[in-house]
Amino acid sequence: MSYDFTEPTPLGYFAALVRDDAALPLLEAAICIAQDEYADLNVQQVLSDVDQMLARVQRRCAPDAGPLQRLRALYQFFFRDMGFGGNVNNYYDPDNSYLNAVLKTRRGIPISLAVLWLELAQGLGLSAHGVGFPGHFMLKVTLPNGQVVIDPFSGVSLSREELSERLEPFKRRSGLVDDFDVPVGLYLQAAPARDILARMLRNLKEIHQSQEDWLRLIAVQDRLVILLPDAWTEYRDRGLAWAEMGDAPLAVKDLEIYASQTDDDLGRDAVQQRLQELRRALS
Image (cartoon, rainbow, N blue to C red):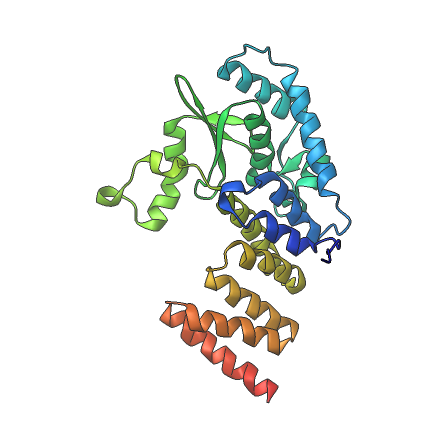
């Protein structure tokens, strides 16, 4: 019997982590995203750094501390003593999505800050979850006497009225008004780890698309295709990026997958036209 002792590629490592929803390690998989930018990143060292932070905040909590006391201790530690917060000066810096960089600068965007905070909160035994709130990722903690919703960008807890105010622009754009209105609670469902990772990657995708950084965009698309193998638009967008890079064979391969699988007739027609152009270039 032969054994393969070669280390997996960063993409292979990510694929192994996200294979099973039931055992998906959110923090580790989120750290791995940075390997596309930081080739020598030591993922285990970053995990160890977070473990050390958890040990520090655990020492601040008495063994019999209740959930509210533990939440207050974490709030003081994370947002006040450690100084984590939103990068208001350079919100669209890709480093805001790389957890190794966020740990170093203590600046990030809502979802990257939330992933770190969640690891600490769950390590303290709190019932904490990420919330895919429209336009701004949130945190929620269930306490014996109710629920606290926290904006990880500012550390501020938000009332139901404040959450409703933040939702109004989204509801108007989506036509969710009057008879079509829905309660705030529907927007506060716990986000699965896979959805959180997809949102992190799509934040990076948007940045790279706006900068026409096709090589970095393709690296993000590679991860999205692994994470969401039935999200056919991700194949389309990777194919279009390959076309921008001038690699017609890889572009055709991805665009053909999209065209054969999508239910979007208009999208399929547009891609079929692009495919004809690419095939002509190959002939």
